[in-house]
Amino acid sequence: MTVGYRWIVRFLALGCYAMLLIPGFIQVGYYYFHSTQVRRGIVYGDQPRNRLDLYLPKNMNGPKPVVAFVTGGAWIIGYKAWGSLLGQQLSERDIIVACIDYRNFPQGTISDMVKDASQGISFVCNKIAEYGGDPNRIYLMGQSAGAHIASCALLEQAIKEASEDQRDSWSVSQIKAYFGLSGGYNFLNLVDHFHSRGLYRSIFLSIMEGEQGLRRYSPEVMAQDPNVQNAVSLLPPIVLFHGTADYSIPCNSSKSFADTLKALGVNAECILYEGKTHTDLFLQDPMRGGIDDMLNDLITMIHGDNSETIRANSTPRKRLVPEFMLKLARSVSPF
Image 1: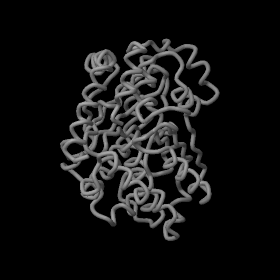
Image 2: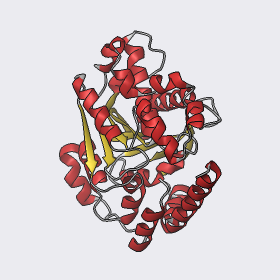
Image 3: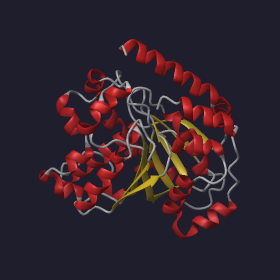
Image 4: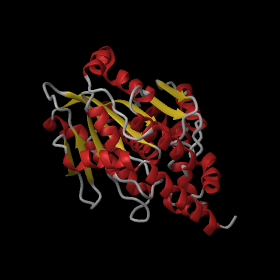
């Protein structure tokens, strides 16, 4: 199969996938642009993409827990608005969500993306109280490529702190927990898999700044370096969510990273969702309405003993897309 043909097939599949989910995208888009609970385009840095969106609960009585979220997009098409569905659903459950934008390739390479994410996290840690957030309950989360970028930012900050070389205005100690959704954490094992899926090795190496970048920007590999053990000990609890039917980034990526961290003494766990694909957990399931296992797990971890009360008082999750369209979208998804 030629490169051109493979790209054409995937592009057509993406078009079909998007068209089948369009009823949901329209509703989420309307909320994004018209809801008074969304604060779009807040500046956190000097670069054009240094912007974030805030999703605020309607009831702002008292400081709220905060999720700083880094969206996915294969390091090429990431955008802060991709987190609007998650932002809406968590804000309806008394959680502030900050969706952090960052430079994509070729506008920037991985070091630029990690730098942008770190600046966005710094803004959340230091400014979120002005928007009603609780600075003592900040959670860092990323999805897909965003999970990788966020984990790199977290580990890099820990390394800076451990070497007493802290230059950023935030601390790992300000992050209550890290949530990684469908992420990849060891690119020495994944680069060939990505190549077979259409993210070709030459492009991926350009994103990762060469062969050496595969190691430097693989959090699982870096965590095992004896020189950074003091940094690893600073990490907050790590929870990795992944679907067992994820073909874009196999679930073993999260399982292996969690096992590595646990062996190093980190409070880490991997939660697997049977039969869920790369997009089920982030798009199809939230658009399905009703009970969402991953969302429930996330809310329980953030709200703790209050989670049942929060769920009981929240607006029931409504269906955004008919079931037959969701199933068709799943069958044609290129992810």
